[in-house]
Image 1 (cartoon, rainbow, N blue to C red):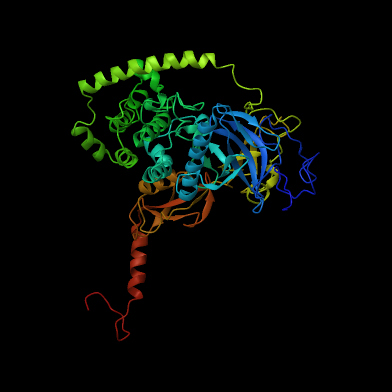
Image 2: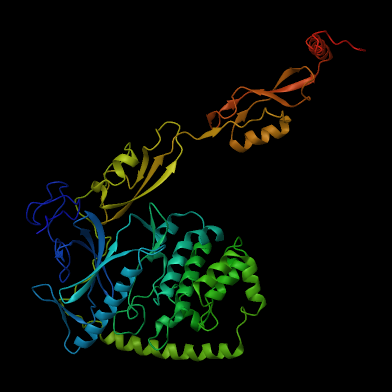
Length: 547
């Protein structure tokens, strides 16, 4: 049997999960909620189950360890709370009476989804599924674990909205990944800022995979939809979702990035569509860009933009967008409006029935069903470590001692702190650690703000042109000094500087500049005579005027 690893620091343990890890000192006791897999459970002789993270209608998520490679992973266990009576003493899931067939078919859907993702990933813009295993009368999907932050958290930290160009660049790999899913016959149905990861190293990646039942209201599972990002057809099991469903969600994410506001939820829009255009909320968003988002966010799937490549090209090229609107794609027919009205009435009836039926069953969950424990649950006794003064590349990055944190690094110039050293951190050292995988933001020195001295001497540019180059680089200068002019340089042109061109200097450094003064006829005459005296004929005789 392979040696046990500490799920906190990945160091080998002697025999069992009791007490504290002798390496990192963290508790090895099981704190996972009742019904979840115990802390330290071994799966398939390959993985160690760590702390419980979250739950949804599909199942439970845990932090885990890939034992052979000593790396962290995410483990998702198929555990539909609406179909299960908990697990047996041996760990096997027990379906509810009369739900056995539905449990098996839903489990098969879960396995098929993750088998497809396993064969499809790694791929640009998609979080990688590393493995799919069957055990305990259920299925486990193993996903890569990346350090970084969600797009939601990133947008919360920003003081301004993203420009359309910035939003398009950030979403480009996500759109490429979704297009690949569609090409393989898969629909994500859960695209939202919470499910987009921004790793410390690399491009954005989409996670949050789920079965059709999980992403459909009124299905046999407890659905998980994201208001503002879920398309209207997802709120009813009677409607079909397709590629256009993910188009809606991608456009909604882009809308949030460029306006700073979450789109109005689809059910509310169906009653009264009060969602403003992106351009009206943020004047800096071009009209054509705003129209593309509006086209992709139409409530009627038949009038909505249909494919992700179409959305990508329209958001990139205004000519493509304008051509689309010229052929009438931005108009909604009266027949479609009537159709939407009928759908609204139908959805209201379904929602009313669903709320009445759902309310009567709200207290019927068995005691053995594991209750979600928020990831924000306090980790008592732990305090935030002191990273101030440490070198990011060698002391922090890749250091397993900080695996309980999501470290987000930004750089900042510093004239006093060496490059690569941590200048500040938030939360501060010694404050209480509030959650597992807590975000710890650090600012690392990028060294002095150096600029390269431009060449403003070669070619002898006039001073008004030369100082524009210095201003652009933040180089300080005083009134230029006047250099005697022997007539070889036009008056007012730069002849020399106190710093040689190409030298790296700190931004704000003062540089002295000399420019040519008025023409001095005496110097010109002396220079001319000297030049004539040094000139000789091929035979060695001086050449004189008139020869």
